[in-house]
Amino acid sequence: MSRASFAVLSHVTPAGSPRSSGVVHTGETLDRIPELAKLVPPERRASCAIVDIRPTGHYLTYGLGVPLPRLRDPERSRARIPVG
Image (tube, rainbow, N blue to C red):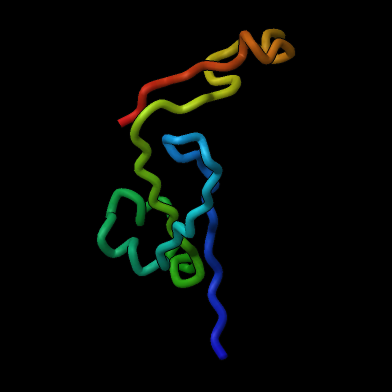
């Protein structure tokens, strides 16, 4: 039996329910994405996995663009940003 690795992305549906989705492509995907392929050493391409995430909607972030001392305050460190 063959084995394969994959990744799981956890998110929340528009109705607020938790959800997880498998999100993996094999390293062969790099053949179609030359900008990304040049970042992966040739000896690692056969064993790598590519995760393709295309977010839309609003996302809750934590700490993006926030000075380090302010990270202690969760309310001031969170932001809701539009994506997509």
